[in-house]
Length: 198
Image 1 (spheres, one colour):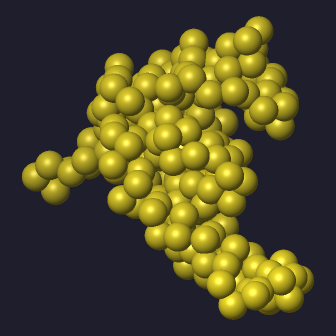
Image 2 (cartoon, one colour):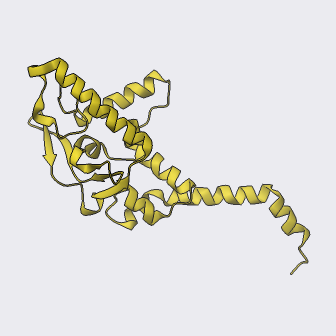
Image 3 (cartoon, helix red, strand yellow):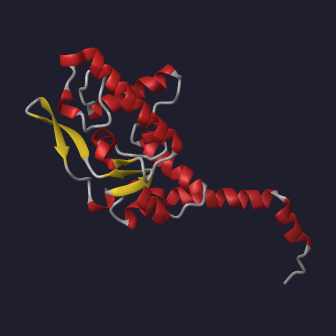
C-alpha cells in the first residue's frame, strides 16, 4: 500500500476502490476507475462503493512500476493461501478488490488513515495528514521537472487550475532554489566578471 500512497499519490478512496480488473499485468498498467468512500449518517458509519472516480479526470491509467507489480503478485499468492487456511470462514464477497485483510474483508478508508498515523508514530516521524502524501508526490514530480499539466493527469485533478492553485508555490520555491544556487555559485561570479556597465 505504501507504493500506492507515496509513489502514485492516490486518494484513499481510490486505494480502497482498486479492483483486479483495473490491473493489467500484460500492459503493466493500473487504471483508477472505482472508489470506496465512508460517510456518517444519524451517528452510523456507512461504506459506499462507486463505479466511478471523484470526477472524469480522476479516471486515469498509470504505469505499473516493477515494485508494485511484484507486490501485487505476492498479494494474489497470499490471498490464495489465506483462502485455503480460512476455508468457509473466508469472505468471498470482495474477491475483486485488491486490498482486503486476511479473512477477505475489504479494508475501510479509515483503516488507511489510522495505519498511516501508527506508521508515523512508530518511526518517530512528524505528524502529517494522509492526504499530504499527494502533496509529497506532486513535490517530487515538480522537483524532477515534470510539468503542471502532467502532474494534473497523474493526480487526477479535474482542472489545470486546481493543480496550479495548489502547487504554484512549490514551483516558485524551486525557482527560489535555482536563484540561490546561481547567486552563490560560479555562474554568478562568471557573469559579474564579464560585466561592462551596460
